Amino acid sequence: MRTARFLIAPVTAAALALSLGACGSGGGSSDASTIKVAYQKFGNFTQADELFKDVKADYEKANPDITVELVPIEAQQNDYFTKLALMNRSPSTAPDVMYEDTYMIKSDVEAGYLAPLDDYLAEWDEWDQFVDSAKEAGAGDDGKTYGVSMGTDTRGLWFNKDVLAEAGLPEDWAPTSWDELLEAARAIKESDPDVIPFNMYSGKPQGEAAVMQGFEMLLYGTGDTLYEDGKWVVGSQGFVDSLDFITTVFSEGLAPTPQQALDTNIGNTVQAEWLPEGKVGIALDGSWVAGNWLESGVAPWPEWSETMGTAPMPTQDGAAPGAVSMSGGWTLAMGSGSKNPDAAFEFISMALDRENSLWFDVANSQIAVRTDVAEDPEYTATNPTTEFFTDLVDVTHFRPATSDYPKVSNEIMVAMEAVMTGQQTPEEAAAAYDEAVTGIVGEENTVQG
Image (cartoon, rainbow, N blue to C red; front, side, top):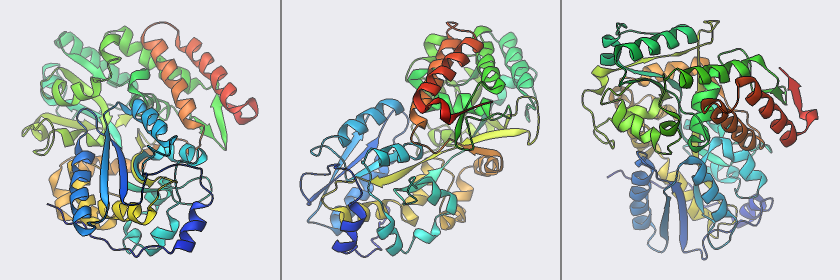
């Protein structure tokens, strides 16, 4: 059992009133004696559920007059966002504490769902352990902090060494361009037609897993970008080329069938079954995947570190810096209508103290954002891929931090699904995306790529 600690003095009522004054109506629990904690629990991702159950027990032991009501939302990512938004719209269901993706913070601040945490953080003696980039990830457009980071991540290529060996590929395989990645996938298909050569998430059911882990890992390797100097980029060749790559892997049978790829559970299946069973050769996925295979994971696989290899995702044609990655992460945020914000922040600070952060980062294969956790021998020794994925921070990118991003992201999912199912050519899907984005943000907020 991890021992949670309370290390912050309650903020004064006057300061609290000021900090919450700018927020929307929100809701929070119906009385101050209960704090409601909402979070995602879906498929293989059970680590947050385990963490919050432990923190609840410790919190209620230290605070016998307060009950922690856990609200696990069992839904795929986009459905989780929808259900969380529905909870936030009603005072009777709005959570006091919520598990919040960094890319949703600005739009949820704009919607009035979140409370600023600055007054609490100024009093928290562990806040200086968080690195600056993690602090920035939880900030709103007004410069205030609305989320405390639980960790970050990077993305790259996982590959089954046994599958690649059958296809004549080396144990230290590392493609230097998209063409080399496609050549490897074609070699796997020729070696064993029953193996899915390459998995990347695509289509609306996969939500940000498709956009961030799939499309943006391609786009940012072309030299183009989504957002530049405060404007959304339209008409870029990199956007078309990225859709063309997706068209190639699905049309040549190098990826799961569209039916498989559009299954909301494919992420769980790839990580817990297909990779360990050698049914997928290469997977474009996140640094957290190994968390499934640890002894504490949902699919323990003692031999995983001997069987699985990793390689950076190459840029389109090998141009500098040669590799690309994307980073994101999740935070704990406070509901704007919490009836007991002192208690809500106390729960957040307990959940993300050193010991609990260390446990969560190890169990969920997160890249630590606390300096004391990053330096802990337990963290550095538990997962042999930690150093590889941490090094990818040097080539990583972040999603545009704007309140428009969730809507734009949805249009990328539409474009991906259109080309993977053969309904549109890359050029047609890119043109439809350009038109949709212009409609969302206004032509004055776009720039030609």
